[in-house]
Length: 544
Image 1 (spheres, rainbow, N blue to C red):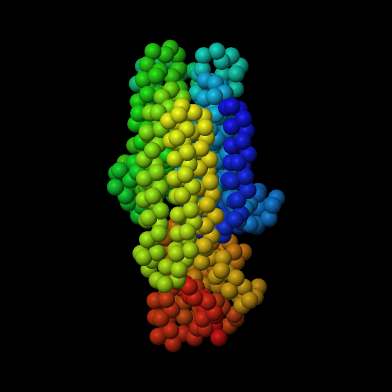
Image 2: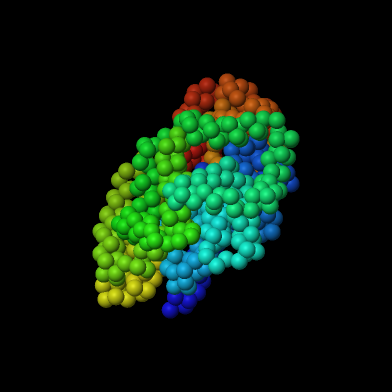
């Protein structure tokens, strides 16, 4: 039963996560930003210095840029190839968790862990969006899983050494994916585990010599090359992007300390209500165990990530993602051990949440800021309501199955329902493309573009537009995350809005993108502009 379910869901996950990767246009801001950096890397052949809109961009290391640029080289530039690395990283996380559950416990436990992770809507949804966090999560999961397997009872010495080397490689990949947290998270979790379990000998047997050699052989070359070519890199990346991001609110991502708590519980829906009991059970179930205690390590790993980002001055929802795969092992232990009827009542409130979600989605258009947005949200709400209906049906089926003590059928129903609901939500999101993507804008601009046309983005920057135009735009009085690049190469931007009219009037074809207020101001100044496209976010003009 377990093996058949695992095979069935493996096929479904590949079809849903990879097969639908190209079904919608890229959305602002992350999908546009990271896809464009990768596109420029592939186009220029510069694999050392990442560039966004032709400007140096050092906020993140290059692992995802490399992977996606290679995807563009092999498959062409498209939404599918832009999302391929994220989708593969998501699937690889599921495979790692399944493999770990099988090797640590049994085939049934590994299948439970896989179904548990598939049913976490937050994890599955982020596998279909271009962000750096899923790539980071794959490498941290590789490090966690191989470390736990290296410590299991009965592991041969050569196997332990190989697994530890994989853990070191995973940490190096994590550092190249998103920076020093790729080293911090495993190190902190290991220290806290040794502290709570009074097992300091564990730290001494990590294959330090070969491990460090492999880590630096993988991680160091790019940092050395980037520093050599770009004197401004080291200070910006290590000080600004790590310590200042964590300790200050400079990035304007200020949220309350409890910001990640509802994300955690909502992210593991429909397992949310059993989460505290599952964590307590996982910890207590290894109370009398001798040797390494993998579930306690998983709990510590997840707890540290939650606390670390909760005290950070910069918070974004996707930051919590690396906690989810190990958490699936914790939840799987409870799903395996608890009585079926107890599990049934834990998931029953999911039906109420589905109804609340459908009600909220139906009334969401009332909050839209304009008539066009209201129309688009009205179209999208049908998809959300359909997803809620699918999830509601799966909860009801699972409740009935678990109440009649059919554990596998009930858990499979929940996983299938979550998988289908996320696919419906993702498919329907394309209805919001006029608001979330620059694709339509690029299509309206294309007939007016010649090879030597100048394109200005005035106090405004659409992250997806350069990707769809296949060329950068000249920023006018816009800095934000591109401040370093503009400072390094000031000739590629117009820093002062007062200089724009003269630049606009230079001989040659020119187009500009701006918001409605800025258009009105420039029009009042007598600047000649002809509107060729307008939507709720932007106006596009040409020079008559």
